[in-house]
Length: 343
Image 1 (cartoon, rainbow, N blue to C red):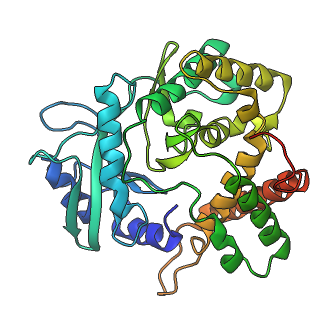
Image 2: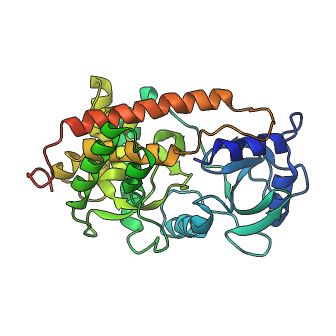
């Protein structure tokens, strides 16, 4: 998540009537777009502008770009290459569109500073929510994530360790002794887990349902902003978090969907019961990492301009509280590191 100050700056750089921005125009130019073609869609991990019809193709597409201050700036090329190579290997993911000069990613000087950008076509189909998910779609969802894992084995060399920032919790939340102690427990458990290629590699990082589009029972994946290196089971925990409670199977209806997801995953690559037993641990680790990522994000603008993001800030504060509760709940039930358990 980019700092809300950065998102607020973009909100002020967008025309309230047209949803256009000279910042987006500078970016869109590299894909052959005329000024005003790109309309603000949203901003979170990146700024996203939609182009209803890309020149030469007529495709609906999305420009995604981040400022030089973003942690994603240096790895956007790696993300674009991963998506491109997965598409080459037949995985149902959107393929980045090349700039007019043939690049996957463009570094652009804009009126507000340097950004790095990529452009992806809209994924074909419609989105669905967990409550509307059929068992067939849940199986397809699991199988597609397994394909991403299986076909990324020799890719993503420039991507970071997904959980590398987790130890920073001690310095960021020093006054919250319960949280710091819980994160130390999580780090101790993660340190004991093997990182062999069968269990650890390139992951999507956010393979939940709102990053899939469906045609019938076939899905196409998009939004690889959080792609990194991690345990495959941690990626599963992130993907199915709406089907679980603190990593455990939730309602009976969702338990059936979770079972179908796991069944689909296992049609493509192995997934042991021991790894499934680690879903609560990874759910807590992912939640703690979310808290680290939110540190400083919620700061309000101090330049006298209107804060246009007060509702988003309230929602993120509620999310922050939920994530903290997940970390504390799960770690309270963990056996001490080194005392045995799944491995």
